[in-house]
Amino acid sequence: MNVAMEHSVDRLSPANVEAECSILGAILLDPKAYDEAAALGFIAGDMSCDSHRRIYSAIQAIADAGRPVDIVTLPEELANRRQLEAVGGYGYISSLLDGVPDRPSIRHYVKIVREKSAQRKLVHACNATMAAISDGCSSQEAIEGLGESVLQIQTGSDEAPAQRVVSFTDQVYNEWEKLADGSGDLIGLSTSLNCLDLATTGIRKGELWLVGGRTGDGKTALALQIAAANCRERIPVGMFSIEMAKGDLLQRLWSHEGKIPFSNIRYPRRLELETRERIKRAMFNVGQWPLFVVEDSSLSIQKLLAKARLLVRQEKVQLLIIDYVQLISAPARDEKERLTKVSNALRALAKDTGVPVVAISQLSRPKDGSLNARPNKFCLKESGSQENDSHVIILTYRPVDEYGNPTGDDELIIAKQRHGPVSNERVYFDSKTLTFYERRNHE
Image (cartoon, rainbow, N blue to C red; front, side, top):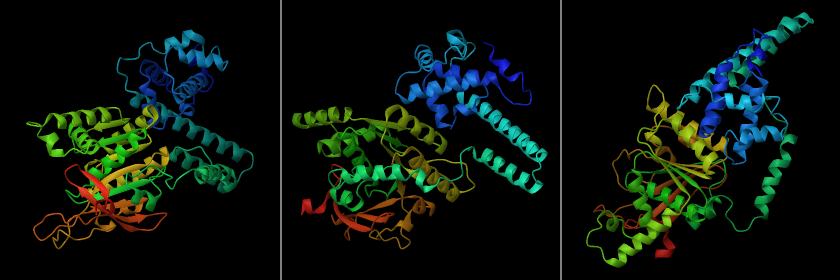
């Protein structure tokens, strides 16, 4: 089958068949390329050839089913759909690999094909407007119709601008009914502390949580504690560590899991045999967790979003933790605009994937320099959009005495909860094992 013939009838229909073939060939060469294309928002409808649309739809079905995409499974899927011969048979599928470089830049091919897709839509919109005018449509109606089409092209959406409530009522009610029929008070994922779980009902799907704190107040420790609590329940967690090396992160988890002073792990010489055995057991336990760590000291928001979507698709991650917001780069004129873009992107990531995001954020220093100044949500550093975008804000608060030593009267302040009350939860932070406890358990 000569796919190029599909375009010979309509020369005014922009297309780049070679780039389409390169996308399909790249996916067959490396199945991870599909995840990258999907993360960029590429869909079958962006292809100009009907055969390519069918092939890409089959690839999507294979990937969604968790099966490998290769030169064997793709023809099999197309054959099951009775479309194999229509796309050109085994020979055409094999030919997609011809000329594909060892490390193809699928991002480049996707950009080309999506641009041609937008051009085709624009041509079709203009043709439809001309046809409407020929049928007696007024100029005002034609302009309005063309404007709507152009707006859809600009936003990359061919869908209706809104949905009537009746179209999704059943789905929302069924999800609510499952929650209502569940057992226990926890609806979302655990925060690791009963007081927080009861106050918030847990970290729910699609939510953006911010854990804020000043330097040394345990914000990263709390985030790791949340990760540990869910990993113990075999819930896959993705951790983006921008500041801390993965080795340091892992050692902190050993300390938390084994209830071993972190100093013993950092300075292991002259340890008793029993302590070494406890560290070894903790190491083994943590090694079995479904925890996926991305260590990148120069992470851009675009790279973070792509990697996060890959983790969700490939590893079925159900919770994303980011340490920390102020270190994520984004194109902007100043710091405030950069953090606003990052915050908006994290909110959209949680909403679009349905996977909750827990992001760590620094707090600004108190203006009076007081070490015991109680933080609030307006202390989030540099950007008020963090407060607006988040569903829940948890602030760590660890007061000190006149000598600068922690008093133990620590609190986790629920400074914002979009669907619930704010409160101050009394906790105790064990600086030796980097673990928060409910204070009543230590009084």
